[in-house]
Image (cartoon, rainbow, N blue to C red):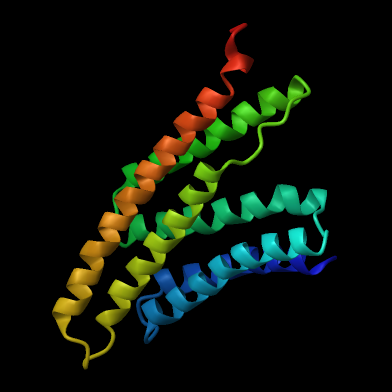
Length: 189
């Protein structure tokens, strides 16, 4: 297994670790440690693709698992955020709806011998989602340190919510863009 694929698998292995820190109330500095784990997992997303392209290590496994690992990391974190009353379930529903829609369109296109490639809007969607979630971890982690003024965490959480809603907007826009780009596959419908 090549390095990019190992990084993708590492991202998947980070998921239960992040979830433990999100959901276990008694762990000291759980937001800080969980956020560091989430941030490290997010960095593997950037690294695996760059390494694969630079060293010509692109594989079918990587093409399949890289986006799946991204979605698993983001969705599991968001579901935990819902349980922790950090965001509403509607955020998860909107993002899941887009992911199922785009995946379904790709399957229909593949059945017709076509490929709907990832575009810049899908990448922007993923990056904004990851940045927003890192921001939430940072805002919550501020409350774990007595020397950080409470208003710092408060303002960081407000900024994180703005980023989260921006990520939802990017998610919706990228879904619409994929639908528009794949409109030829639905002309016979």
